[in-house]
Length: 190
Image (cartoon, rainbow, N blue to C red):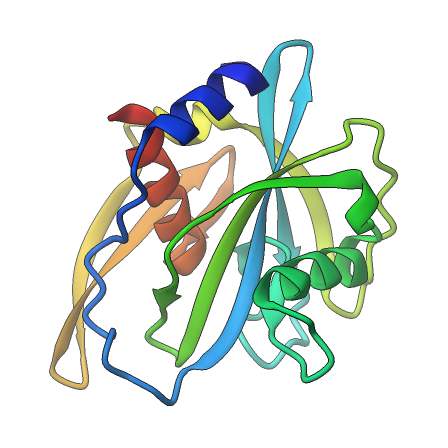
């Protein structure tokens, strides 16, 4: 899939949130992530990180760049761009955001708003090792069409949650990152 094909499909589809049973919680921590895409030789890749083991929330998990909204952030979109710059050294002028997904509410108390955008293929990452241990690129097609991906239902505080798992090339992608990828897959495959 090329950049132009993805944009056409994205713009033609209505974004629908995954079944989210935590919608009525007002005490969730607002946060944002960027779904960063890079086009290389007509193929799209998605940038993912492995979080530092020393982080308080979601240590060592595969994730998108992002984090909670700070007081000085102008918007949730600004949060996604600021966090991408802080974690990866990829500045806002190297990113072209073209869409936003409905927010996801996590079991751990976050309201995560995903933004999707293209990153300049010539980006030079400077990883903040206090937050991220690894930055890697995976083909978007592999994440969208992998028969090894699955979900399970778990119960927490008498609420049933669907938890997605997308093991890919040895990376254990699960939780909110996998749920956002599942939402992207739904948009692109319908």
